[in-house]
Length: 407
Image: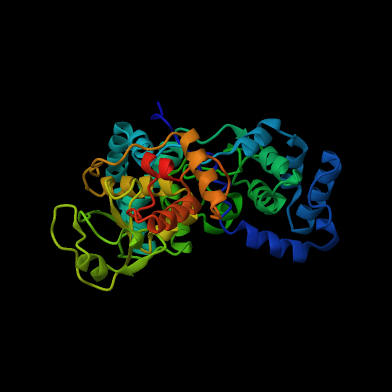
């Protein structure tokens, strides 16, 4: 049985994590010419005919083209896309739910069971096993929950829809190519936004980054753990993973410091934080070196504190939600032997309605908080820090009832 609360890419990001698809879409638009003129909308069957011609021009053979006969508009996909939300839970709530006993147990078992594969992955791509295992756990509970949407229909539905066709249409030819080559069946299923396999990657990434981990001549990301591990490592390296460097570290912060200096955007040498009184979790000094790092306080200065390093940018490439990425980074740390982080005693989080009210007040003061959605995103955190500094409050980016009343 799968563990509770399996998370897929599509369910956890502000927009589907299309990674480099936008650039790919631009390139395809320039190269495809007249066949790409009708990018979206209109009669669905006529649109599919255009897609078939584009695929044929791209070299997709008969088996791949025949798969288009099974494509249907899926209104469930459109509903998911329209309702796609962001994390309303705070970091402690979300991470406490996602870093479950089941995942910790299964992760340890898989790290042991496939130790030789993880070792090869790190030797070849520089990505530690615990990092791979954390994504494997959060995305599909180690393959147990991979999605039940007909992938080709899902991608066609989203590509035909004129909301964001440039993100989804470039995935159709790669998927048809995989089907044409016999790598995937025509009726392959996955997440609603087109991601596939045990770590939920897009067809273009499957095609380009897929690796045969056990030498059987196949890249099976739905059923073969060795292929999943090696492909995920290759994919993370392609996004910029730096071998031998950390991704995040729990730290202790002093009672007083320049809180406005915190935040992912404020990167300094680790020696800067050591001089400011930040220590390792156990109170030992941080290395006073030049390692680039940022201090993040997901629940303000009274809550858990972490230093994040350049490798953390890869987590944000994988998923744009800061709550998700911190959770994935912490789960990887747990797999690597670290203890659960110290929750400390943060001020009570605002409710969604209170957060919306606060965002409205911030917007009225001229700050760009993005959508008024009740979620503490990057724009809202940045605006909060600016307002807190203006009011002489600790500028840690954490919304409090006190601030709500003052504004």
